[in-house]
Amino acid sequence: MEKFTDEQIHDYLGQLDGWEYVDGAIETTFEFKDFKEAFSVMTRIAFECEAQGHHPDWSNVYKTVNIRLSTHDANGVTEKDFELARSIEEIVESE
Image (cartoon, rainbow, N blue to C red; front, side, top):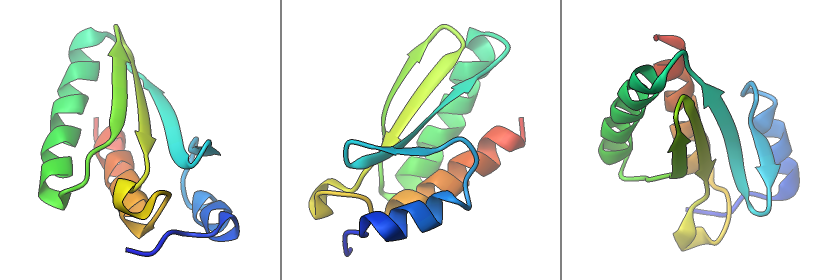
């Protein structure tokens, strides 16, 4: 998988709401109504990550989930990150 240029990353970010390019990765934060909802969504995202064979750096504190995506093998952001970001968006929007 080929690493994207900064210009490609910024173009792709225009297709996502609330994601930013920070220190070599794309990242976002979601806030849910409570811990149970946050954890439920994280579980659904985890299954999608396994299906895609691509895993985020993420954290959860109470009702907040922080997600950071980069492709370690490419040492930067690739199409895989944007594919997963779009899937994450679909999961969150379906809640």
